[in-house]
Image (spheres, rainbow, N blue to C red):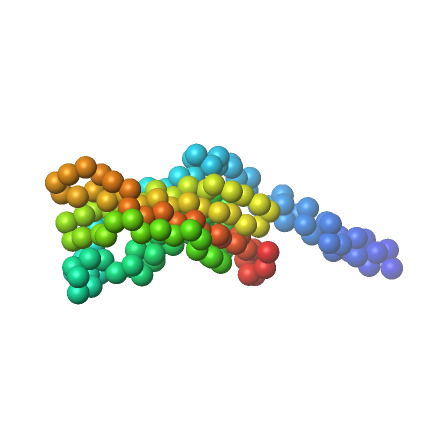
Length: 148
């Protein structure tokens, strides 16, 4: 009976969590400035519509991918999920001559939710760089089982 009581104490929720924390390596936390992600992208002919500009859906997909990567980097967790795109604005069309610079950074943090701002700059072959798109992405930080 003593053996059973000792093992029962070893399997309590607190002792299992404590052992799990001991095995898990400590991670250095990033500041919001350190989590900034910059991505340069060149468009391909398959991204162009009949007006010879890049489809807006492709730009949104690229923005969402860089926002997700920024959130993964900030949280140190690969299990994140985009739950909304807010305040997305398209100021200038993206042409085949433009390279795209996307800068994502975390602007708001709660317990399980992050807001990532993505700013897109157009870098034409000839001319000056200008800001063209802005969007805010709300991202949910999940655990390995898909729960908050």
